Length: 392
Image (cartoon, rainbow, N blue to C red):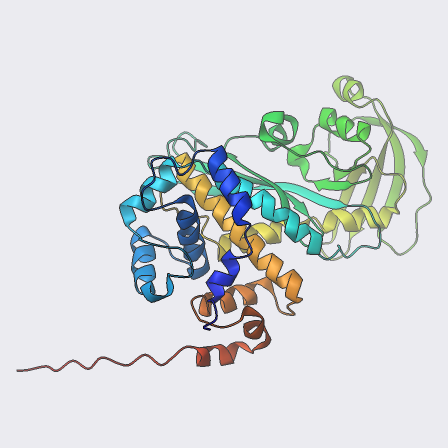
């Protein structure tokens, strides 16, 4: 019996029952004759794995692999059909698939590097520039378009535990405050690090009431009075560690409790940093290290922009863009799941290359990951060269 392809093994990781429920919930397959939502997911994940940029590239690439379609359930591929499906079928179908598979990844994810047992998160957004004339829904500036990808990164496995898309001009703090965006409730004793784009004492106090710790950079115009001071450790970069109470009229009203103000000197950047937090338990140097670890979310944004197709889109409608982003993030979770389960020693970028090279090969994915990258080319049969006979 011939083995399934690497791509077929990837698709088997997605729950068919859960996917069917999502399709039924949003009536995705209504009036569908030949190109179902499952086939749409297959095609979009294939384009992510292959790094294909256009509808034509996708259809040509898939047609060249027609003999290997039988195990995928793919029947036909047409540019117009795929374009219509991306535009009209609800992107929430693939959003549900993302969150359903996220739970499987979180159960296998390794812990963060810190010894503390608190769940650690970072919240931030990244901007994807778009042409305003082609994407009129993505307003950003008067003559510029863009969308924002807002992400809550779980440092346990570097997984996006929450993700939503907005137009470019949407303020970051609005996403965590407005319940319409679906920002999740975090467990008590969780730690969340944010930059000054989320600087809002009303939101900070809501975290305090939920027993959630926050860490952010203090603004220069912060008005406060010092009510206490902690002992400063030697040779750890901590300049001061103070207990403060806000004195500004609105900040004092929004956050009536004490806060902790830590001044830290970063010797690498030769820069003085001031942090504000509601955590009085951890050492001041640990607070600084936790905030510096927020850089992981910047690396996450950089990785998905370089390795996933979320900057060039197959359609211009908002639904088509959201569908492509959600399927891109599903592919990210598939890669992360394989890395966690197999304990793959190399980077996620290396894993992406390996999967892309062997996507339609009939080989066990575990065997592929044990091979060195140079040997992967031996898996592909030599293609006969076509000789052209030229007559003059």
